[in-house]
Amino acid sequence: MKTSILSALLSASAANGAVLWDGRFNEMTSSRDLNTWSWSNQVGPYQYYIHGSGTVDKYINLSPDHKNPNDTVSKQGAKFTLDGTAFWNGQTMRRTELIPQTKAAINQGKVFYHFSIMRKDTNAPSVNHEHQICFFESHFTELKYGWISGEQGTSNPNLQWMTNQRSQWKVEWKAGVWHNVAYEIDFSGNKVGFWHSTGGDPLKQVVAPVSVSTSSNGADWHLGVLELPRSGYNWGTEDFYFSGVYIENGAITTAIGGPK
Image 1: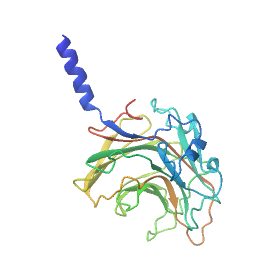
Image 2 (image 1 turned 180 degrees about the horizontal axis):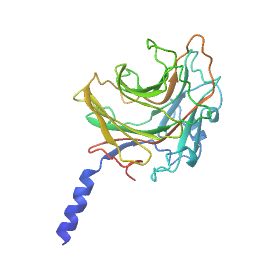
Image 3 (image 1 turned 90 degrees about the vertical axis):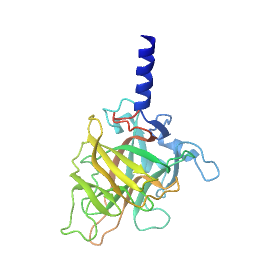
Image 4 (image 1 turned 60 degrees about the vertical axis):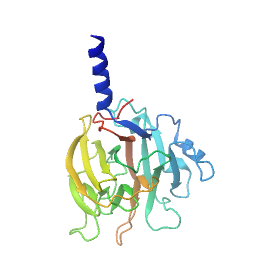
């Protein structure tokens, strides 16, 4: 009997992934904690430097109301805001982004980048502007929302998963719907797949791994949003909601929120 119980526990452990980096905001009391990080004091789970000229609470706010309610592991989520001041370093695009602060091997072997994302009708992201969401510097994998340069028409209501600027999956992004995402990245095999679900449903692989040139220095995955300007279309205040953010290796955790 004892042997059977031990075997079951070992099997369960082997079936779960190992969290390499935890960005679920559980240890933070407010977004002001992000201000403790600097290039000379690299502490906490996030690098916070890509934002506008205002105080941190203009761009990022934490609350239990900002998380996927089906996620029982995360204590709170984050609301990311793009407003009339959200221009970083003199650029013409609007940006509010966080980058993992870690020395873990999040850019080696096969890993899974997890997050959940939602929007509301209040301060809804524009369907007329291109939004680059949760992207790497080389854009080998990312989400996009809104009209993309070169598309027909003037608007696009779809949330899309892209690899190397090519759409591999899309769905209309309706207000109040939590989309749970995991990028399956094989840095050794140069492939990336896409896992997805909504609400509290377990993740499922919806796109099998495709070939890409996976490239990361371990400090260039941007949790957040970059919005491109577009002639003839004005900016408006936009909110994006994130929760359940973490990176793991091993077998993927399909339960929303991840391991405790």
